[in-house]
Amino acid sequence: MKTISWKRFQAALENKERVLITSHVNPDGDALGSELAAAELVESFGCKARIYNVSPTPGNLTFLDPKGKQFRPWTPRCTASWIRKNFDAILVVDTSSRSQLDKAADPIVDSGVPLIIVDHHTIGDSFNAALFSNPLADSTGLLIAQAFDKLKVPMSPAAAQALFTAICTDTGWFRFPSVTDATFSVTAKLVAAGAVPSVLYASLFEKFPFARLKMMGVYMNNAQQYFDGKVIITFAKRADFERFDAKHSDLEGVINQFLTVAGVHVAVLLSEQISTDGKQYVKANFRSKSDYNVAQLAKTFGGGGHVKAAGASIYGMSLEEAVKEIFNKLGESF
Image: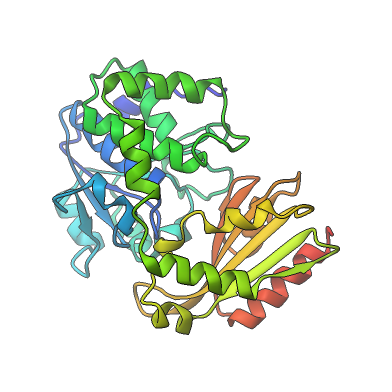
């Protein structure tokens, strides 16, 4: 596995008193867990860290911040000048794609404040940041955990819980092909540091809202197979989310259900969404259980991710148009 110079990472934060930490829109367990642990890590360097996110914390991940004080909302006051006034460095975790930062992208870039990225995705633009990346890592959480280890920084039980959450959610509870011996080596150390897998599993997978079941029904009913059953495309409209009072974050992992169908190589899950600044777009999630590279598919639509798991936020297309364009693109391979 590629080696990252964590000494260089520490040096990048030398003499930085205030660090802004953020991640991608619609954060998952890897994004949020990595943010929390990264905050503890950089504070061990003598920095003061603050986490600001564009999207609210998904319901099944609120246990990471039970008092609701660590994940702060990205509000209209978070301008480029506000960043320059309040922070000496910006740390972005779990994405190197400008589009994935949503409304935080322009203020971050325009601020001119030194930018550092820790990520494990294969596709991004990194926008002149100091990039600490390893596409072979199963999660950004794994990288942050390795930073603690290599820099010999003591880890609190809370950080261990956060990093275990990051790793287990991005590996599908250790069942995805991205899992390696490094995964289990690191998670063993996290358990020793205070992570409790049984508690985390219950928090992550046994406390979903009823709306999740109703939306699963929508996606199941709308699913269609194409290209001799090799591809499943399904979708939900904004009206479905409103009818069941559901959020996109309620659907974490649902797309993987469609890969359980025999003969399916690729699953596509689409939903009509509204961005934080009121723009309509189509959220696309792609999964593969073959050698088909869904990261390249996502890149076509302005997104990115991994070979077998990727996504995109598609602006300027209706849901029907997005289905057609994705179908046509897949048709080039299937």
